[in-house]
Length: 72
Image (cartoon, rainbow, N blue to C red; front, side, top):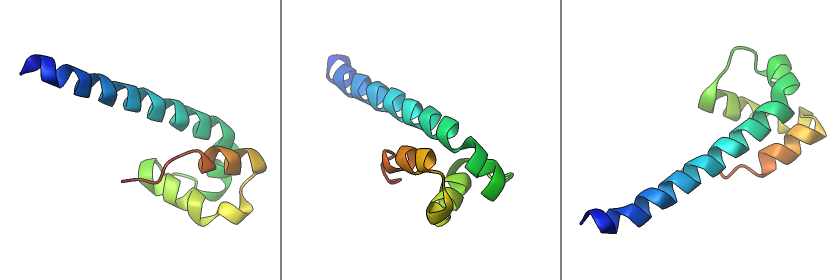
């Protein structure tokens, strides 16, 4: 049973690392936009704020946000 769970655990780890990388990219690209338009918001609330202000975002932030998959 344990050997059957190992591939699943490895896949989840890879997805988590990829998501963390995307989060860091968005954080770097959108830092100024987030401070200006979404000051004090974090996590999902920040992501929603950035999406709702998408037409006002810098080009770097728009590009980074376009690479993030929608929340499940």
